[in-house]
Amino acid sequence: MSLKSTNKVETNKYELEIEISAEKFEEAIQKAYLREKGKIQISGFRKGKAPRKLIEREYGEEVFFESAVNIIYPEEVDNAVAESGLEIVTRPEVEVTDISKTEGVKIKATVITKPEVEVKDYKGIEVEKVVKTVTDEDVDKQTEALREKNARVLTIDDRAAEMGDDVVIDFEGFKDDVAFEGGKAEDFTLNLGSGQFIPGFEEQVAGHNIGEEFDINVSFPEDYHVEDLKGAPVVFKIKLKSISKKEIPELDDEMVKDATEFETVDEYKADVRKKLEEHAQEHADHDVENALMDKVVENMTAEIPQVMFDNRVNEMMMELEQRLAPQGITMEMYCKFTGQDIDTVKKAYKEQAEKQVKLRLALEKIAELENIEVTDDEAAQEIQKIADQYKMTVDKVKTYIREEDVKKDIAVGKAVDIVKDNAVIKQA
Image (cartoon, rainbow, N blue to C red; front, side, top):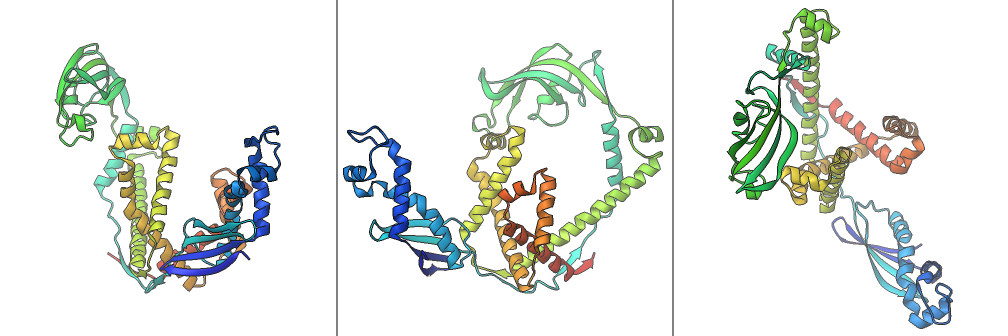
């Protein structure tokens, strides 16, 4: 056994004393020699052909020590952590305290462990369920969306642009007669009145005809995210290339027949109302669950290591990068578009990350208290669902996700169900 002692130095922090035998260290040194010898030149030998003993005599017997330790310590530390029975939450910090050919290697590994958790009163939590009433106005918004979706686009060539029109323009912005970064575009489609551009821009495009080239004078808002442009007066040179307008149809039985599976407006509106009511019910159920989980967190006590919160923030940053990647957007571009830096983005995730970590710990404790067990069949079914969702083989999924982690996720889901099933839900 490589683990010699486990010492608690403070809450959730332990030091593991690990010893690697001289025999194992010798095996690692030999592997390091075979890996490194091709880089070493010794007089009288072709590069990579010098015997190990000669290299050690030339450069010192410790010449391969660092490489050997790097080869051997990861597995030895992992084995020691497993032997200790500690559940760690981040990679150990490793320090070599002694090293020699005759005595082997002594290592001190500092680990941060999952905290002890206490959860009280997770059964019988009282919450109020509020289901939003679906109004005629809500239904009308959906019908307006249907009309918009079925609108025709009419090309306008016999009048000047008006507010409400869609125009295609080329533009370039200048501050003090110098073009500024991000202020130029060609064939840009803009709805006049959408408020997409800074105040005064769209209103000054209105009144101009196709083919006209003209200047627009505006000032950026004082709170604009680009420092050099805050409150600055600028000139945009514009070329108006086309004008179009949406023609929105009336909502009648004929339009409903063409655009939906229904025969009449009344049938369509009834279906819209039904779906809105179902959505309102789902939203209310979601709010109830959130309220219950908030209460679970309130009733949980634990000294949680900061590294757990930091790790979750980093995971969320990686998830953001993965969502942006298919759109061809890097994190650097995202920060530029949103006027933020990496630290600001991380800070925005901090509160959410802390809540998620606390809730996970609380639910895992509830699963333990309730003696929740997850069978191999349940885990296999969940892995199959993941494989089907991402169109992967089960074996491929298992290279990314450990079965043990899948079982923990299922147990947490069952813990949520226990809280919900035992809650006292009052209808508002």
